[in-house]
Image (cartoon, rainbow, N blue to C red; front, side, top):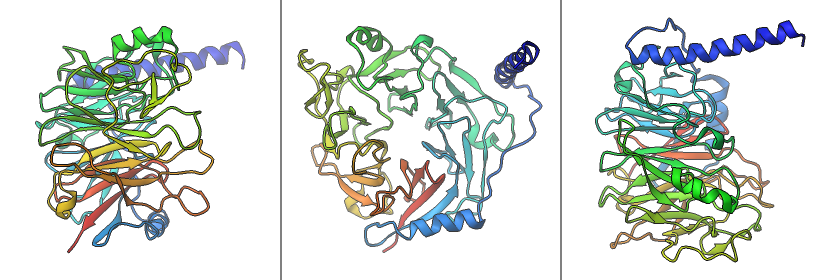
Length: 413
């Protein structure tokens, strides 16, 4: 490439960034951006038929059924609007999707991109406040959309920085690895955001910096971005958390260390009962299995062990407490979670939906497989579940970023 062409390319890139920044500023000031076009995803045709053929191979308990809810490219974490009008689906790319079932037949009629004038960077984690504010945790920014559920029909929608780009993690620590953020608004009204740390196991020189900023943990902030504090320590890479509606306790999944063999360490489902608790990483790589890098270092005496252990390298991601009444009593108050599937295990595992009941004392029961079949007998992935979300009728949605779809699991007597 010649100098003139290179200069032109750099200027074009700079203009794109400036345009994206000015668009967010315009939306924050309730001004139009001039954007008029949506990307709309076709919901029928051969793609839908191929996905339905895969779903015929999925096993669910008696009385349940799984159906295609929507074709959603790169579907990751989901946030169902409090009014039940639209479900927002994040991705690890540059789009967040608005999924609408207009006629309430429990199949989406429309899937289109949300706020198309904004340049998103790994908009993986949408979540709603009870009041209907949509929050979006990106790679290194947090945005809010106060009326997203009612104004998503327009390309322009009010949008604001909660934490501007570069304020979620220090720019020097911005990584391509473990940057799929998730968020929830807790019973205290604060916004909880997970920050996966970028290494398989970090060096000791990084620990103080990471703990200061909550990298390898979960932070909480006020909904206006103030009052930041580290709520959870000793987490490797949590890509799923939720609050027990019965007592407000925070539960979260965590992905364990690679390179210690096919069958260890276990994946984790964790229960946090107090602010500031430490969950063992990097001294433990999962469960009570020590990491090679920290095996001679003393772990925190108060390190909390997992509430439940999952199969090694199944990649436990999104999770949600079931608060509906459509499913049988056995499932009410328990946890549904998605296993994305292993990426470097000799024999692949995972690619399924798990259910973990809770005991009377609030502790975890024994996890069990709820839906499976996305990993066939040849070790080939037919899908990779990412997240679980509940619709107002008590059915649940399951996202799949390999196929690019959202499924609905329902129950009938």
